[in-house]
Image 1 (cartoon, helix red, strand yellow):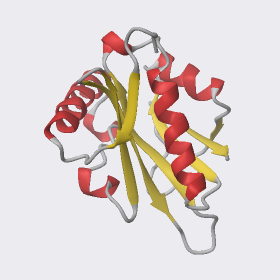
Image 2 (cartoon, rainbow, N blue to C red; image 1 turned 90 degrees about the vertical axis):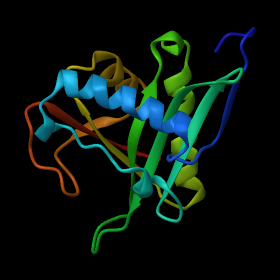
Image 3 (cartoon, rainbow, N blue to C red; image 1 turned 30 degrees about the horizontal axis):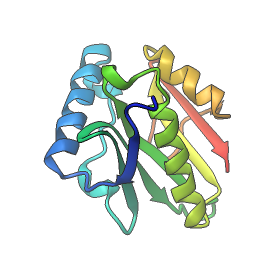
Length: 159
């Protein structure tokens, strides 16, 4: 982020009106890019403690980005955190906001003793795909309740 606009990263209730406004913008974008069966919008309750966490990124007094993680502990498999709802306003893109959010979400997982992050994103989001690859995420098949979808890309990263 730029020196003249210091960023502030802090926990945020996903039900907060500012968070809901960002998520609504994200949903509008995803709905324009993909059919409804390819969108997997996590409800706010799924990103609240104790099984989730949600963070916001502010520039000054404006919430410009958000992201969450949902904790999973499937029987007979390693625990993992699913990165959900990462979104940054156009005005803050290309300035490291999404990277800051991702680093915080990974730190949140490691603090809970979870050493694996997974996520699903779409093929029509080249910036997101590039960010995840740059951060060390590798492609994998569907996980959890996801089905194979030609419009989805699934990633994971050992933390």
